[in-house]
Image 1: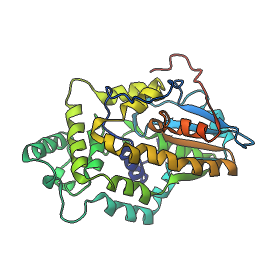
Image 2: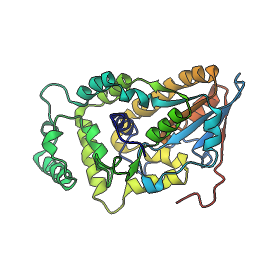
Image 3: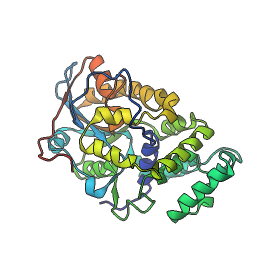
Image 4: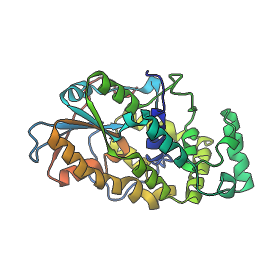
Amino acid sequence: MQKITYSLLGVILLVMLSCKVINTSNIESDVPLKLENSLLWKIEGNGLSKPSYLFGTIHLIKADKYFLPSGFRKAFDESKSVVFEIDIDKMNDISEQMKFLPKLMMKGDTSLKDLITDDEYSKVQKYFNEKHLPLFLFEKIKPMFLTMFTDGDFNPNSIQSGEYVSYEMEISKLAKENGKNINGLETIDFQISVLDSIPYAYQAEMLMKSIEVQGGDTNQTDDMYDMYLEQNITDLHQSIESEDISKYDKILLNNRNNTWIPRMSDYMQQGQTFFAVGAGHLAGNQGVIELLRKKGYKVIAVLDERKNIKK
C-alpha cells in the first residue's frame, strides 16, 4: 500500500460525509425495488458513444477485507479518466493542505467541553485514552471529524501500518500508474461547507452515539463491512440513514447526489469515465443509479463472477 501523505485528510473528509453512524433498523419507506447486489455498474445510452462506469467504494476498510470485483479491471482499463467525490490527488498539494487544516477547527472559542456534559466528556476522554490519543489536542476540532476515530480498531496509524485500506487512495494510485486523468465531482471547500451546515451540538451528539455504538453488544461497523462484502448496496444505503442525522439526509446525500448528475453527464460526454463514490450514494429513490436512469441513461449491474463473494 502507498505511503500515507496528507491525502489521508481527503479520506477523512469522505468518511465524515458518508453518515458515519449507522442504524440497521431504520429502513427507508420509499426505496424502489431492491437493486442487484453489485458495486460496479455500467452507464450507457442517452447519447453516449461508449459506456462509462460507476463503482461504489467504502472509504476505509480493513486490509484483509479489501477486494475488487471481477469486472473492475476491464471497466477501469476502458475508462480514460477517474472521478472521485473530490479530487484526492489535490490533497497532496501543499496549498490545498494549508487551506484545509484550519477548517477542521470550530469557530470562535467553542470547544468540545461546551457541547457535551461533564459525564459525556469523561466518556469521550476515556475512549480516546484507550486509543492512546490525548483528547486535549482535539478539543477544538469539529466533532464530526472526531467520529473518524470511533471506527473499531481504527487510529491515525492504521493506514500507515497497513491495517486499514482506503479505496480512494488505492484507486487513485492505480489511476496514476496507468496515466489516467483524476478529477472530482465536488471541491474540498464545498464538502467542508456541507459539514458546516450541521450544528456543532448535533455533531457532538453523533460523536457520543458513535462511541456508544462501539461499546454495545453488536459491532455495527462489522455489519456495514458485511453488507459491503456482499455488495448489497440497497441495505447499505438504508443502514447509513441513521435517526441521528435524518434531518440532514437531504444535505449529506440527496442534494449532493442531484448535484452530481449533470457533472457526471459532462464528464461522460468528454470520454469514458470511471466514477468511484461512496457505495451509500448508489441506491434509493434519490440515489445516483436511479437519478441517472431518470435522466435517460441505462445503468446496468456488472455482476461479480467470483465464487464465494463474501469473505
